[in-house]
Length: 374
Image (cartoon, rainbow, N blue to C red; front, side, top):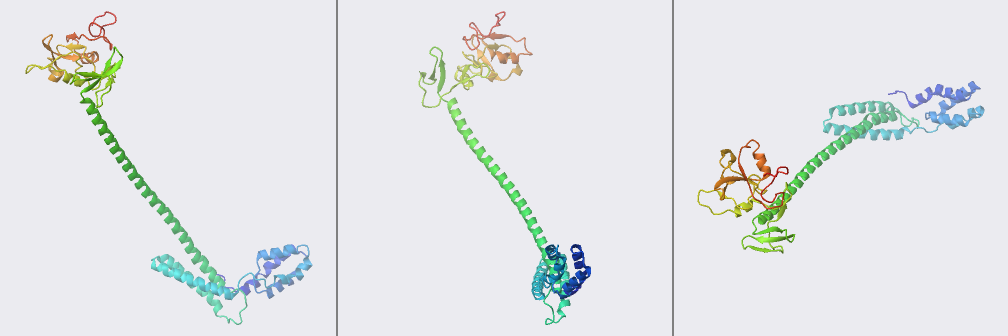
């Protein structure tokens, strides 16, 4: 810190003021120097560069008038009085003391040491003016201003910077915490939504399953009347048929995925409903309209005579007893027969007699388009 008093600072500024005047007033340097000396000796307050520039600009073309009007620069208040500065210093010192106590309570030893050291330096500067008699002191600035400035710069502004940094760190951390909580909340919401969706889908699936089971186990069947090109409904228990749709569930007609023909849903139900009563130990008998033993969807067009005796062909559930040939056979549709007999071409088979339509020729099964053989 500068140990000089305000009067010493004003006296030392005489040379600087003369250089400023000489740049604008180039004539009569001796008279200019005398005017500057009068300003320095009689003024109680320091002069600012802005104050000098404004004065010299005002009398730039009037050098004599500028030297005669230097009284305008004397005792122009540019600082506070030492009484006002003493009040500010006491306020700053009290604030620094409180800050030091808070830092000691918070166990911030390094910052507390800095505040303590700066406070002692400010006290030593303020003591330079306390040794003077207040009644004889001039009404200008003193060492109290330097002490107050030191406390402001190295304590108050330092703590303001630390406080701003702390607030910024807290904002960033709180933003991170809120983002983390939001991610957890969003994850829980997604999980809750997925649980609700699974429950809803399960409920809908159960309702659909109950409706489909009711249709499969229903006594009513939906059939097609080719003569009238109309749908009708048949009750296989009461042997009753009708055109109006029954009030309860019924087994509907569906499209075959391969032939696109109209077939009844769950065609395997027809096999169980069309079983004849046989003697114990006999397999099921072949009836008109038996479905393929492999896919269970398309109607049987060929019966293999050797697959029934082949151990690798399956159990008795896939065999039927043909009352015409008095032998066990395995019924196949054309597609499944070709697939199952790729490496068993030597097997003998019987072509089933079928109704015309759905890709079958009248007179029995499928025939070659070239040789017209089955």
